[in-house]
Amino acid sequence: MKLEYVLYGFGILFSLAGIGYLAATYVRNLSEIGKLASLVLTVGIFASLTRYFREIGW
Amino acid sequence: MRRNLYLYLALACFAGLLAIFVFDGYMGLYDTVHMVTGEQRITVGPDFWIQQGQPFGPRGPVPFEGSGADYFISADRGAGISFTYEIDNRRFSAFREEVDVSVWRSQQKLRDMISQPVAVPGFAKGEVKWAIDNREIVPADFPSEQTFQYTMVIRSGGVERRIVVSLNPIFRLEKPIIQ
Image (cartoon, rainbow over all chains, first blue to last red; front, side):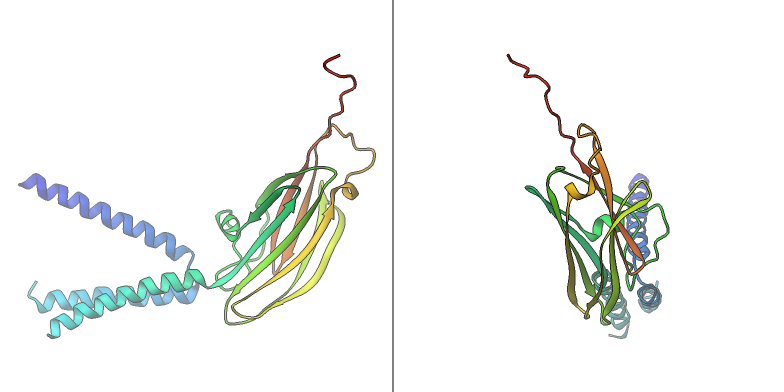
């Protein structure tokens, strides 16, 4: 049972690393205004998700 | 209901993020060099210049910083090469620059090919065409059994594209192999 959680952890970690790598590759070629808009939207995603999790009682 | 609103908001932000990636990737200035020599049709697209770290830039030309990328082609000594330099302007503003093309060898300019202003409106393509006869470039006393190289340098809007042309040697048999 515990081993499963460790594997889940690795899976999540590698997924996040992959997404992070892809995002960094994309962001490198973005224009300055595109970078700014992406930053604002990323903050929006985290803020909305934080609020959502708080609303459902996490 | 209200908690779902934040979830939808997060999804909307994510969709916006993807839309920015797609839109921003499409927008910009892109240049392509088309070459035709003999039976060869060669296209050097913007991907090549971007991979070499010399993009035109998402919103405008990036100044050339030396150590440029060279694209190598080969051609016959007696043939000509026709070039088409295409500029794809995916911006709202027009692109107005001078396109200078010259032929170089061993850091020395052999000749100027063309120098003409190009005006490309927003979301349109513009092109400049020229041709070169390889026989006019090779000196008369250059050994025919040696490869002759020259570089076609295309300068436009602060960027430089270099096409290195290798002219194939001509081998002449002094006596037939089979007698």
